[in-house]
Image (tube, rainbow, N blue to C red; front, side, top):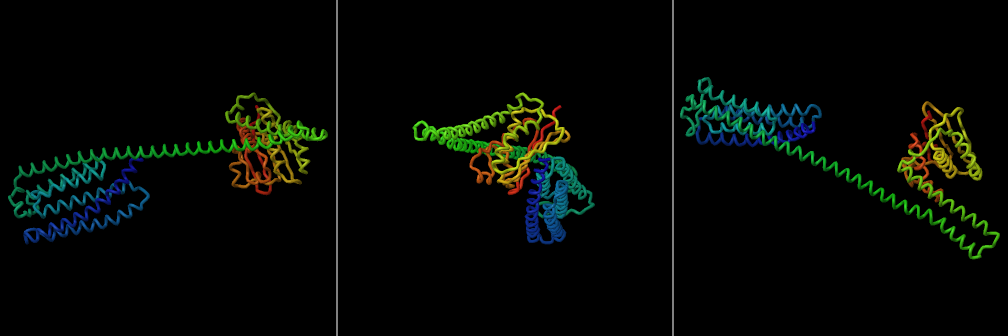
Length: 457
């Protein structure tokens, strides 16, 4: 199909070339007729010859108009274009035979223009149709010779070139017809072979060009991906450095004050507790990074799983986080449907899912807001969700919310602390357990993260 489309495009271009060539043929033929009229007045029937040339110009004009219509066509163009080219060649052969008849018949050396026409046909048409054109041209030439020989049509000799009565010599006619037929079919064979080889090479070039273009696009995609990975690595290093620098500075300052005796004894305990809190933050960050690395390697699939009640884990996480929620004047509620079936998961990973989702909800919800963790079951799945009335997520940030190290713009404005790892980790945990997670959010009105896990057998 692709080769046919390429051949069709080539055929349209060559038909345009044939239309232009025919105008040159009209002009050249008129010049030859004018020269014959001047040099040999009253010898040749000028009127019929001019009429034939006018007919050629007329149908070429019609062909030109039809070619414009054909260029704009979108349906069945292949067959229509092929038929269009064939009709032009047949009419040109008929016109050539008529001009030969009025200018010396088979004695006219211009009979070799039949060869030119079949060569043009071999360039334009498929090989089988080219041989058919050669057969039609051979029939025209033989018919012209035999009709003049039999006297059914008159013979118009060319002064000085013909008029030797060769059209009445049957052996000459037969040899001449045989020579023309052999020349026509030989011309078609050679021209179509060369044209076919050129088309095959052109097709190979086109295929190679397309393959090179596809390879170039693949390389561009790989390059772009490597560039993104490099940018992500750089951003990751800067992020980790930034996140670690602040707690390290705090720890160093606290230890310096405590060990240098600059802090009063009653303040030392408080300062050490602050240092401990910073160390805990650093350990949490390191743990998240390690968990993310393991998730990327799909090591979660190799870990042991067990039938787990998500409701029990949810209740435990809510009890741990209720104090933090109440300290921000947030309502933290739980909505667990009855008879929620267990699922095959790693309990520690699911605890991490609930913790991340609830922690984010508490972090990005203004005082007085509401957070509700829900758990229910439907056919084949257990569904969990965390809904809040927080700051929400902008539509342009939502497609990237589960990407590594990504934080929404309003989240960064609200809190400088955060790695953008939590939601990426949650997504990998859920998907490694055979589930899926998605987001519903409206900027300024809140968000809801929903996940589904397959029921345990």
